[in-house]
Length: 114
Image (cartoon, rainbow, N blue to C red; front, side):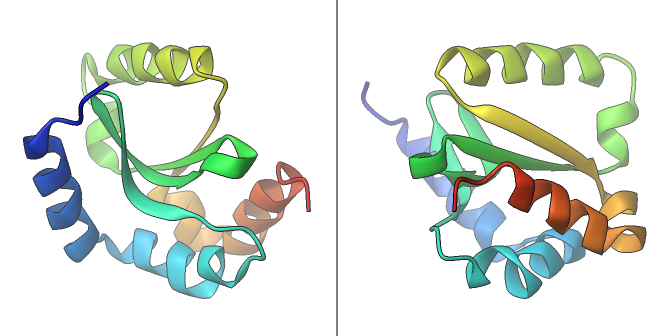
């Protein structure tokens, strides 16, 4: 499948403008692991927050917009599509990253085969 150039541009913008929760998870945990994660990775028609292709693992951090009307259904549709490609999708709220960081990291680590 040919990548949409707009998706690539959007992923670069998102990578340059990470949320404080994305920065925290990236700099304090994910980039220190012995497996490689990609930030704001394009997969088909979606941009995922973090992806480890070798482990088939996607991590999504959900801000308040994910709890607005209709967004939960879109997240389910997106997760089902990514699951159909063989990925496991882990979702954490920004609140969890801020207040339960060690538990979030432990849960992510438990899904890795390292």
